Image (cartoon, rainbow, N blue to C red):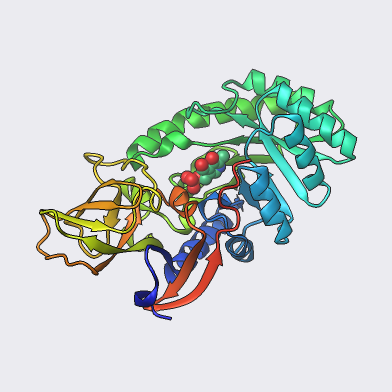
Length: 364
Ligand SMILES: Cc1ncc(COP(=O)(O)O)c(C=O)c1O
């Protein structure tokens, strides 16, 4: 089948670009002796997780138990749930999954640790734990080394848990390279103090897990980090390009849409709106636009209704007609993928494969 024959809106992935992204990251990690544990929230497709493992990843990362379950059922046996698992139903579910595979979790509280320990001991399971550091993003994580050590010492007394180390998510690094270098100095200060206090306490850190897509190719510059968890790198998106963490040629994913109306002057309306794309803001320049039209960069993806994409074509030299097809790189790839039942792998103008987005919507 040809791409031009796909019913729109359709999410397509250029397989040549995706394969290059996968091998480049795997090679960087090999060269810098980093374990690669990609976050699969960006694609939610077991087949792609398996490709990541085949190209050098040691395991995968997920955010939710439901995602872990999909991946485990597909045969993936080394999974980090980088999210605090709280509440009896969830901890019991976690312990059951841990009977079937090597599962570790990230957490930042004694309450979460004790809850998981109770479920694990009831189930006869042992669950690996990474303690999350807040390195400046201000979402989850403990913000000083003494608190990290105190929680780690408590965890070592809990029989259902195995303390494995530390993890952090530098979510505030969605900025340009120079700003990232400044932020990195602060993170390195915290990392160094943490490594030192654990060493003094005689508590080994087998894993120090860092890294996202914006920091991925700078991971070797973070002190003590021996594992990284980039997610978006498999596809990249407009925001990754905006912060110079990838180029447009590295963007593997786009959404093919059809112009359905040109009745309003200066507008072309396409058949993908907020239920097809994410409404994530653009992180660069004037912050305008919700995607990049590959065929015509003079077009602004101005706003979305649920089923309509409003393209401002006033600055374009092209005359748009009903039935024209365009491909749009979304601002944020992960939230876009999550809205689709399937995505198509393409090479040249041919559709080579179709994947079900099996872990989409797994919010628990
Ligand atoms: C805990 C954690 N690790 C890794 C990632 C992957 O980072 P990125 O989305 O920049 O690829 C995320 C993304 O949200 C995350 O929350």
